[in-house]
Length: 575
Image (cartoon, rainbow, N blue to C red; front, side):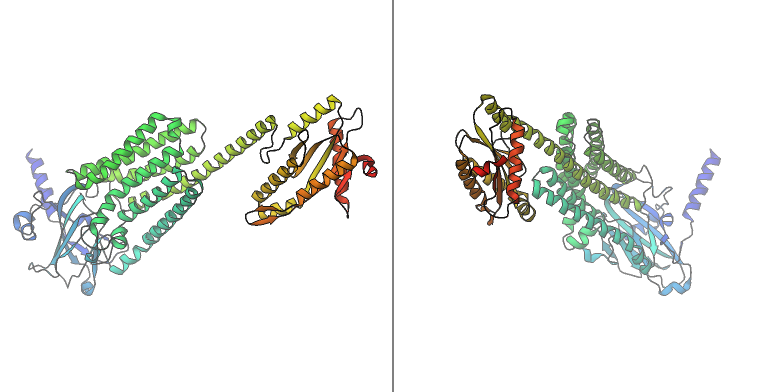
């Protein structure tokens, strides 16, 4: 036991006798975390004079594993002894960077020379102070200082935060630090730009389809921008430079609101109410809990505990949505496959930063970049999943339209024009053949219809077909029938008439087809050609009769002058 005590005492003395940090310009900044001494201020009321007194200086200690620690609502004092590695650097500016944007308040003191004289005024900044308080105009907490010459200098800084921890402090040359942030700034700008683009994409879909699914996607992108800009410090810098309380609220509320919107989007995309109603209910409960946690995190008695619950809810809800995606995938709902990969990426990304904040793994600055990239990748994949869902809906609608057309045809009505269908025409024609009654068949085809379709669109073409069909029906008797066979082709079952009477009727029908059709402020004009075949052959089938009328119609189309009307098998000569 005596040997163990002696070893412990020797280790403590070695710890307190560490060499001051020898400042020199280094690529990537000079790591200072292992030279930092830390004192936790349980009273939250210690002053600089007190911590510089001999009793409190003795309380400062070097953490054993400084970057692996739990965030906590506390006040920490840090002490750093420094000296210049090269006296020629006496005229150089240095930048101490504390990598945090969430600190409520941070106070930089010193540096103090060997005589205890402060070489610079106190700098007070943090999330609860306006942006103008930042001495180095950096989103992260940074302090500019100089060491005037050889000797040992001591700097102190006091951190008050709901999320206080040991920080990976580095000492930079200011120019080097500015250059080192360029990649991060480009990454942030790219992230925000893509999120805005995805938001516009969602707005277009919401405007076109009006579904809540697309509205929540837009809100997920917007709250994602809010969360990232707050965590990156851009909300205070750009949005609320003189309103730090709003930036602080955005920092806490942004992630929770983003999780709420993401959950509501996911439950609709995955159709959880249909595929997994119990899981859908759990998602709704988590949503309510997150919404209630937002105000309580700021005005409740236990903000850190509430924030921990929010973290767990975000991770837990993401895991729940992974399960929901798997259930939907088992039902062969393929948009769930893309959703699964998007949520899985996010779970991996945010999981690292959450477990680091709990002290389970060592904290590293790039963990936030990983989470940011995961959030962006998730929303991109969600956008692709929405496209996949649209394709699925489109295919379903086409299949439904085909089935509807089949049912309408079975009922004997053309869905577009309201006249008889091909099936109804065949049924009526066969009935007349069986009765042995005399009748005629006319085939009528529109001329110039394709040009109307190509120039004005299918809606214009549909309007022409519907108008022409209505006009043809109005000019036929009650025992006569007009049917649309397909495209712009119509067939007519006509009562027994003389050839002359048939010709007069056909002329009136062709005139009706040529009359302008009013559509969207335009007068659309088409022509028509007709062929007529009279049933006068004992064993003739309906198909044969239609073929004769069809050949006559094409003879009419070839006529260069006169009425585009022809009769089958020389009946025209009798006119």
